[in-house]
Length: 334
Image 1 (cartoon, rainbow, N blue to C red):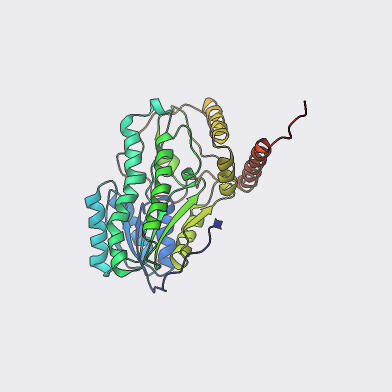
Image 2 (cartoon, one colour):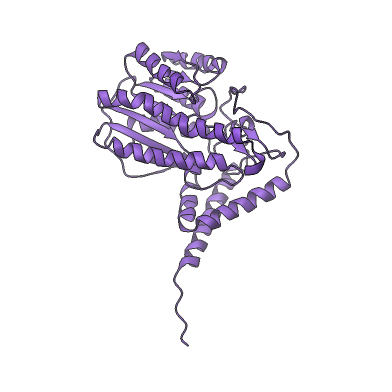
């Protein structure tokens, strides 16, 4: 894990009140459990009540007080109601985590326009709705922590997932701009989290317009690692954190040669799809609540550790190749 220089640390908060969106599966579910063990008071949000009630029951076993608020983050009115419900129950909000994220895999023209729109509405506008609901509260109290889940996709493009790329690039810019606006409040923090691919059910839940079976590339991060990072940010907020062995090599390679990285990624993805088994086209969870509520996607196996190292080495090598290509060459004498 890497991070930028530390920002001022929040005043210590006993049993912080934490609003967590996307809490019913994957990273959100792991995060809810990690916060419950850490002694937090929780307000859990997602579109489906069933998944929320399940994770709330598990959190209560650790002694956590939990409020469940079914919420579609694309609806600003519902998100405002979420903030009001949290304040009404606990009196205030210490931490707001925008963790909702959806995606669709497919060529740009093969993916319906409404799917592209839904991804932007969820991943970008949904995060903005959350910030809009809680920032006035933080400003009034002169303290609070906003955490935006962005992903490595905020730095490197993902061919066959153009709307996802657009949403994450936009979310990175929004987060940096908002952080600057709140710079006069030293105890209000805006944190950006950039994990690489995480082993969650996201690939199973997401939309698939390729007609092929999808599998995330190795190496994959354990969602519990991201959950522990959330807990650490609550106690020690920083502007930016990255997690995953390939995160920094990928960012370096993209900074040096973005077109080369994008074209290489496209080639790898295109070849992978060409050899993949057929699968049904599906809108996944874009327009309906997620049906599965597991933490893990089940993609990691005994080869995970080796793949993790190999991926980091490969991207490191790519960065070195890019550096060499960009070095000024000595002029030849006539």
